[in-house]
Image (tube, rainbow, N blue to C red; front, top):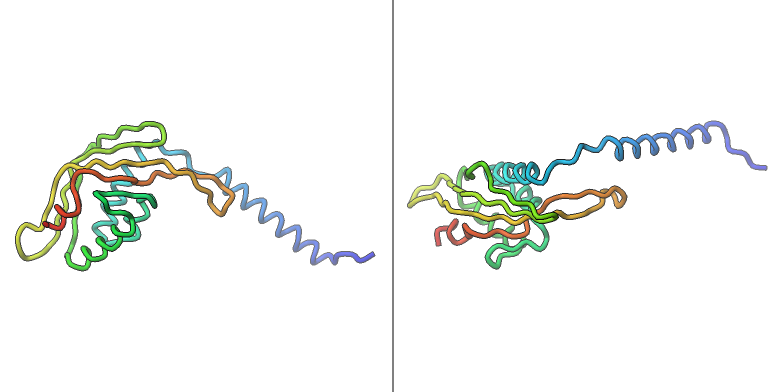
Length: 167
């Protein structure tokens, strides 16, 4: 009978223990769930920070794949943001708090007044107006194993891209 050497056996047991410890930490040390209202408020702050940092990927991480804003989809939004950020200096965003948030199970709507501005010579480099943002709770799996839920922006109404660009 062919036996397994002690070093190989110890290495195998050690690897198995590491995998089990990792699984335990991943499953049982998950952060406590956050209420939809708290998550949506955090998403507004994340979006504001990403906008002011000209972080297109950070903004698009908040948006669902089937996003829609006055006929603009996620890919078109990416192109518009890249072009916009190339042409403006120091973009800034403000929104009126508290947000008006209504949650309907796995969807939510947030309403607020938004003001964006940037440094530029020329007429009125600021835009403002009401905005309504619709969210959806999406299901996913991390590493194909661990289920999770996240809120994504699926639709924006109100302040439109043409107004922002001054068209």
